[in-house]
Image (tube, rainbow over all chains, first blue to last red; front, side, top):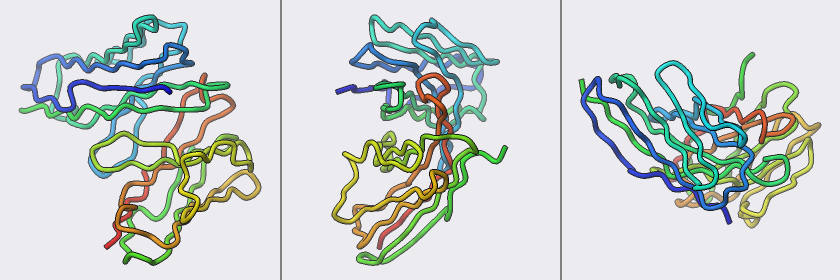
Length: 113
Length: 115
């Protein structure tokens, strides 16, 4: 059974500092890994999608890496801003055609002005 | 594109009452998912549909939960009767043709409070 773990569960940084969020998974047979952002009381917004054949994806200040062999992904957010405060969730897609998504518990981020 | 639309956004009911949630997926998305997210945790899958067929409902508490996806488009998730422990956010998502390649799109969710 695939298990996804995110450490730390919560993180507080001053504005301008780089953020590093970690995600680990137990079964390396994944189709892809997706990072989501969730604001309080809201649904999930997809940030980055990394296919299993890729090593990283970048979008603006966000960069996500994937190491399937070690079962790890890292989300980097450069020059953090108060607007980056949210919960960040990673999820891996497994099963036939990747139609089974397993989530980590999330990392709650607070960026202090 | 409207995205995945869910309603209602919030629902407060007394225990033992029934409740229903509605989801309209992205047009053309064959796969539809219902997830439940408890406070401070990641979402957990309740049921997955491929078109109108429920292909994975192993996590759905079938004694009180039911779901349907008529004509392979909109879906409804029902709880009857609701219990205090059902308080959570219920998220709908869709993907096509393969979630493994294209990723998933989530709706804003329905926050259920059972009192």
